[in-house]
Amino acid sequence: MSRDARWQALLELLVERGRLDVEEAAAELAVSAATIRRDFDQLAEQQMLVRTRGGAVVHGVSYELPLRYKTARHASEKQRIAKAVAGLVAPGEAVGLTGGTTTTEVARALAVRSDLASGSPALTIVTNALNIANELAVRPQFKIVLTGGVARPQSYELVGPLADGVLGQITLDVAVLGVVALDVTHGAAAADEAEAAINRLLCERAERVIVAADSSKLGQRAFARICSAESVNTLVTDVAVSGDMVRRFEEAGVQVVAV
Image (cartoon, rainbow, N blue to C red):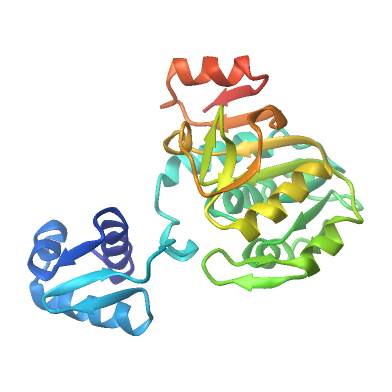
């Protein structure tokens, strides 16, 4: 197991349990206790966890796993979802992309569509995600509009009143949302209220709203509400979604695409 994979696994275990002992973590990951101690020390230096005698605990009262450690979660599902979402975008449209691992995959799927290889522009992409803008800026056929704002290191997203100002002046054909949770009753939600506010603005400026979310996020609740389920036109998820969940979303007026 590579160091990055180990670190991701350790952080996910910490998020789940709140505390890890060295011996416990070594057994879970099938590595030596010395390796885990070294990993804990290096992650503590990055303020990703708090070192304790014999183990580690999560850093702070509230914990959100940074984007760079989320990329392997449900990776194949996210790639299938992204390809399906990209297929719902028409050439020449103005597309809003929020930050997140699934929307990053959507950006990559759009970038390799052969019918979007040329145009003036082939697409207009509006995003508050620095990593998405960075990946797509090398595509001359795409017009990239990056909002202003203050960067959140956890998600690479720009938030705050500077971003609000840009989004208030534009109109989108479609907004593609990455969410932490989507529930029929409680709607779409994010972990951070500033991110949720920007995502909400993208929804309000769009003709239609697509949520790209793997099935593990459905029926869940999160801290900061983005919009109601009724505001979502299409949900693209994976085939592990239950029939009952699909029915409930469809009754709320949401088209469900399972891939």
